[in-house]
Image 1 (cartoon, helix red, strand yellow):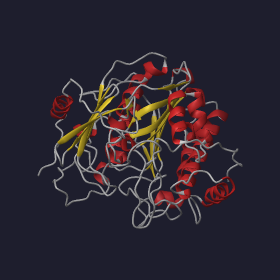
Image 2 (spheres, one colour):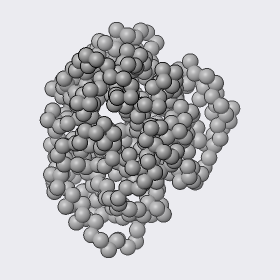
Image 3 (spheres, rainbow, N blue to C red):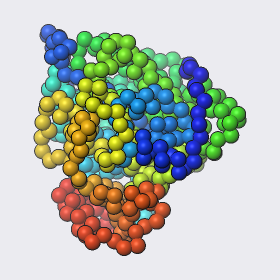
Image 4 (cartoon, one colour):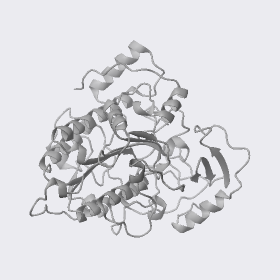
Amino acid sequence: MFSSPTPIKFFSALLLLAAALFRCSGQEPAAQTPPPAERPPNILLIVADDLGWADLNCYGNPLIESPHLDRLARGGVQFMQAYAAAPAGAGTRASILTGRHPARLGLTQPEAPVEGGQLRSPATAPGLPLDQLTLAEVAVRAGMRTAHLGQWQLGDRSFHPSLQGFGEVFGGGEENDPASHYYPFFSGNPYPELLDETREEDYLTDALTNHTLHLLEEWRDTSWFISLNYYAPGLPIEGRKDWISYYEQLVEDTHPREFPSIEYAAMVSAMDENIGRLLEYLEQSEQLDRTLIIFTSDNGGLHRGGTNFRAPTDNGILREGKETLYEGGIRVPLLIHYKKEATTDAAIMTPVITTDIFHTITDLLGVPPAGESDGQSLLPLLRGHSLPQRTLYWHFPHYGASGGKPAASLRREDLKMILDYETDSVVYYHLGYRPDEAIPLATPPEEDFRALLLEWQQSVNARLPER
């Protein structure tokens, strides 16, 4: 159970913006464990499923309580303009693990592709290619233990996490979507190790955290890389019962602005509570200061409902959501906590993207990436320096069940262009003036953004939709 949350304040959409602006090869352990001073830092990578940019209190949400993630934001670096490399999970997860853009990997597909539109979607890769260097393989080279827990989304057994450098795999692999967030979680028992450690009434987010805590204790005298991928707050929208009761009472007592789904709020707070358990253990075991913690989401929030559920979130002031290239579909929370490198506690406005996570970790571990690079290390930002200006790109040539349509986009400084493949037309927005993308620019920029996009697409061999 959780402790009684403190009272919250409620903000308007404009104050949300103001808050934003201010503020496998299994490996064996080494025969001799090096002393702590000589070991690589620990790395805890936490990826939420379908968590929107505006779904945490530290990003201005007026209802959802997230005190432990708020603590990470206050004590670390909070990125206010962080982007997923894709508006759907598989591509973003691949970008995190390899540092390469989903278009380069051919992994742009949504989880539930839809056919029958004006265009024909291109074929996509069946999984994360085994010849790609992953963060887990980088960690193995650095002499670290590795584990993947939870959602994978990167292919069937032929592309299993155990074949991508993860020595320990728990509760994740070929089956991506739970039937329920309560025991027995999945249909067909794809993960027997998960059922071995759980029982009736257990909640999936708790179970993944319990096993993570087991690894933290078992590996406390080694260096490790743990990739913890919660299925929350993704479908099915099913909050933990105690948190649902809390939010029902909160709404009744305080009458905040209507929130799309109390169940969703309960899922986010249960995830936050479990992250608090991890932080508490790391602090008590004196590992927190030598652990790099990265928290993010695989895409923007799911803003549309379905046959059996209402829209779980609204992405605040941002337009649209998952499977679209508007800000609501690709802007995500990103928190980095690492006291050894972060010389300042700050909210950073520099636009960054999930391919940067790979390069930040390889930079920290001193293992240079191989091949083409689609990201850059964020360590300079953690140290109080700036990064060179660059252009960010997105490519999503598909229809999706959440309303996504084939499109591509780029952001250059505060200007953003979206190309609609159905109409073969472009529209421009100035995110510095209107991050809600409510009003397009009347006059396009002098620079030919469409030519920039085409040049980039050719450089990564992007697969285009066909008529």
